[in-house]
Image (cartoon, rainbow, N blue to C red; front, side):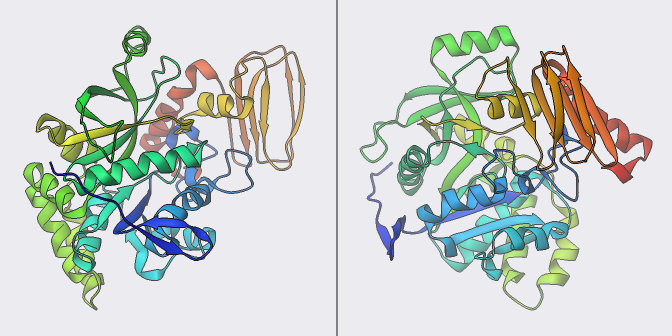
Length: 383
């Protein structure tokens, strides 16, 4: 694939943004492993989980605005969250709000954004970045995005993989191949494949080998190339997305969305685009040398709050009232109740006005099964 040169366009006093680049923020899902803090009405991305004083969504916006320009950020979210998203992001332009009537997973969300933006601006390069991830070093993040955009311009589907710091079992992994040999993306490597969340023993082997990166779900590509790859595995889905994009900026949008959206296939972009592209030799990865976490459960939230010190007790909540003696873990309080902990280690306590969760860091991943059980039992009032 041919080399290309990345150009920049100025934004006054802001850092220069990358030409032809558009950021896409899929803001969906409820973060069920963070129940009862994260709910359908107030999903994970609408919470401040870092203590920054801002929601994860706002942090994501602030990270991307200098890279693409604030007027070139598109947010894909559910209709129910429109008001909350626009309150968090007053700079978000109306034409860059894409509303889903129901969740259809990442292929539909990212694919629709790509189809709309390609129709508006042929040749556009898009980058998809989740609304609810935590990234520590924005300068290194930007450097990784710049390399990924260069790869995208050359025709690759690019992703940013995270250098693993421990044998984590809560993340998927990317298996890296040979260096791409790109002057514009010197750290880029071919992707041999993806691995789902491994066992601890397997994760230790991955870490020791040095051939694996954490899969952060960041994808950067020319919109036309992404849609081309999507059409190879999901032709009906691509047809539906193109139909939606054709009507998006017309008065027919509402009627077409109501007709087409329910028919779209629900599939993750990892399966529809990333894995097939890796098999074709079209997927490249840029190692991201920055702190990253998807805050997937309360164990990772506790680690994030305590800086990794297992002996600490992390406390979240503006009006939290906690009395602790020889205890560690995390307490998240959204009530005025006094919470007292004595001699408990790695405890997880989440206290909300209508639901209380008590578990341990070891079992934090199992919170999702509680949410599934609540759905089955019809107790949707607490979801």
